[in-house]
Length: 339
Image (tube, rainbow, N blue to C red):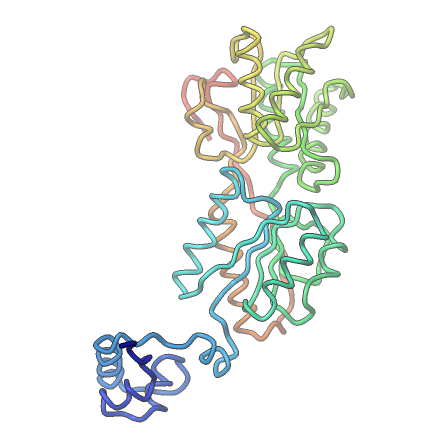
């Protein structure tokens, strides 16, 4: 015989309290004496009662769920970002709905429609230059924190110092005596890629070196793209002596292409990346890179989002840029890692 579902009335009867008291225990709305709360929780555990999330959200107007929209879900950068988001969300008893928008704004609209009514707010990583294509689809009154979306003030935002980090790593290569420095860049419409390319160019110009168009190759932020881009650089009549890849995935792909060609790193070609994903310290040789506090970026996004939710999405918008740190390892010729 099928067992009937335990209700809030059953818990109230077992605990010897009113239904309203049980409701206050699980919604957090209204005072409840600690001894009463303990008795209600014990009764619920005995009866194996599970609160109805849908009914609770009607009372609290909260789903206790946050949405996370990312351009992709593959790769260490995104897994580290989600780790920071998830850890902080769980500390505040929130859960996550995560979606990747691989195809850009069109797929974004579908993801937003699927989440509508199911989340209390959104964390959106949007490095594309066309921020208008994003905001046209965002629900007007939903709390939102944008990551890497430069130049938009309508929402809370957190960015990374892409320009400063790129310039610092290229200046490090210059300080080690390199003058023939190429770059493997991200997609042209990616705002972060553009800022890292600008930092690379300005570092060269600051040293009196004119950037060369044939030493700027796009790798689309993937290992395969970095591998193919490095092969293109090696096929040039004049081969670069150092490569700055605009993220670690492309740098690792480039290192593989250099090894395939029988070249030694850093003796024949030095390599540097950007992001400092966990695998960077375990490559051979370990990868010099620009450290981005990826987990912290995710954690701060959730903290800012919950603050916005608590304030009813009415407070003034704030915009923050996280600093980066140069991490020098063996791929540039250092014997030990230094920051």
